[in-house]
Image 1 (cartoon, helix red, strand yellow):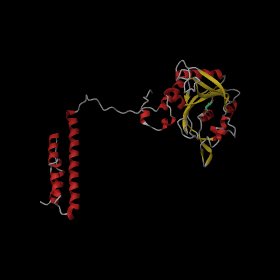
Image 2: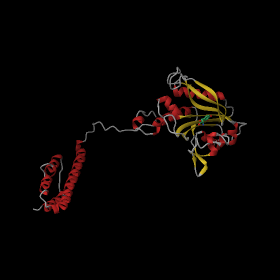
Image 3: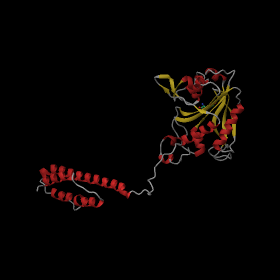
Image 4: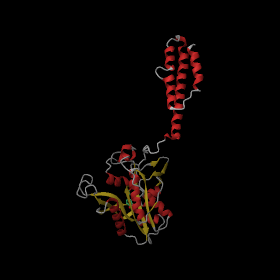
Length: 341
Ligand code: DAH
């Protein structure tokens, strides 16, 4: 019989191949696909096919080989699944470990911070990352010529000069005051953007948490107490805080808060530049101008506010030396953080 006829005949037979167990399957493999099998015999015959027919016969031969292999695989699959159903299923076998993801370190730390403030009665508020000038600057008492409005620091949407990427989560203060009546007690986590060159110590986006408390008879002592409590819960009961006078347009008086360096315990190390202290946040009493600009009567109400970076707190807790690690999705880095929440 000519080679092409044999191929055609076999092609017709493939569909009727049967194998109901491993042994029959192996027979099939030996007969057709092994080194001494039919396919290899045909390959040997193929060598004698005249050159002008080689192309056509070659195609048919390949087709036959592929269809036998395909049928073989299908039968194998069927036998395997049958074996499970027929009782060869080993229910005591250890399952394949399921690779669960881990929470991102910034989310872990953010959740921990939110939990601490939630226990103190703060609720979470959020606002848009694409904001207008009013909520980011004007409503927070920034002067028209304040340097933060500069293109060097802030990303502007070119076609709409009033629309920017928020540079701080303080914008959510203003959004909350618009919609809620005092007493207000909110914590506002979110992503912020600044026009910075990316390096180990700076990034064009990062994360902040803003706090705002407004009521009658709120004092600086209340602010100090809540920040001390936060620092101790976050970094340990021995943590000390100190407040240094500072300036922010939206608070008066304003302060910056340092905590005793939790890496060297306050003795001095390279992280705290041998001072024993690390700065972690800005804070102060809400400027009466801000209350009034946002529809809250500053003659009746007072408030305090604070804001800090989540990356910095995360660095203190986990000693991440390069900010870029937080956004590069390197699994080796992310897998170091097992989920606590
Ligand atoms: N918005 C400030 C910043 O991005 C942080 C800040 C300072 C927030 C003092 C506050 C505050 O609420 O009272 O650097």
